[in-house]
Length: 398
Ligand SMILES: O=C(O)[C@H](O)[C@@H](O)[C@@H](O)[C@H](O)CO
Ligand SMILES: [Mg+2]
Image (tube, rainbow, N blue to C red):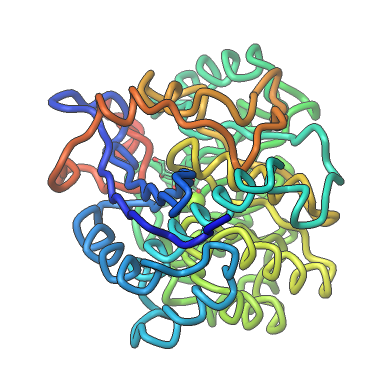
């Protein structure tokens, strides 16, 4: 067996010409590692409207990983960490690195003929509860939300995440608060207690707005408030906690275990949401989960990009005793994303299950071939890239 990484291919994927979902994640980046023995492993890096910087960063990581033994995940990652001056604070660098880390585990699993979860602790969770995201395109009024949410519940989901704050940004008007209350209240009265409502703030508010909005929605018993504050106001989270009765979740912009350790030990967060594709990959996620577990904190991984991310994330979820719930966009993906993995996992009736494939699963090479693109993601200056399409509107604007 020769477990050296021989060839490295960096691939940008997306749909040409057409924009089927929000600009969010309309392109994804893959790395394809081929070993000296001809085994293939895939990893994914998110683009987050930074396709070209992430892609360039992947070339930097490639220099470090080329020729290395793919079994030596710790050493290879550490070698990049040592060489990357901005690693702890740069999403491009951590995303690029994460793709290589995930692809290494895919190779390890394929070499040993076993799914990755069996190598990192084995099965704790067989059925993995999912929550739906990406379902509320063009929803502005309470009726819009209820109508689409009914479809989500029909699909079998028992939890859904959404951002009810329209075009309020940084501050919030009384009207904005009232509309958010109407949306969340309408969903709560439609579904009663049987559906969990996860409130996404998208890091959009400064302190006073976050406090006002959070207190106003409390009576509808949200599952969590996600990123209620601008990410660079994290120190204000402690103030928020004096007002909130709802748990605070965050993590999609927290880039490694050391930064998670800070959030967790300073008691700034109640539920963590690491994103495997920007926080260091599979082994780093295990470490982040262990730090959280040491403080009694559950983990609900962020998962907003492509199926390789989902497959890697589910392999970790399967092994975690402090796993809470898993984000899923799959039902609302364009077909190319739905078909990008031939097997690896299934989503049925609101629950994920791994299908027992070696590594993280099988990638459909013909889709990889067919949907290659190059260049930047589309940009729309009327709507920030981080909202679900058609929702950054005043509530009377349809
Ligand atoms: O938690 C999340 O998934 C994110 O904040 C974000 O990645 C998505 O919600 C995005 O806004 C979808 O358009
Ligand atoms: Mg989010």
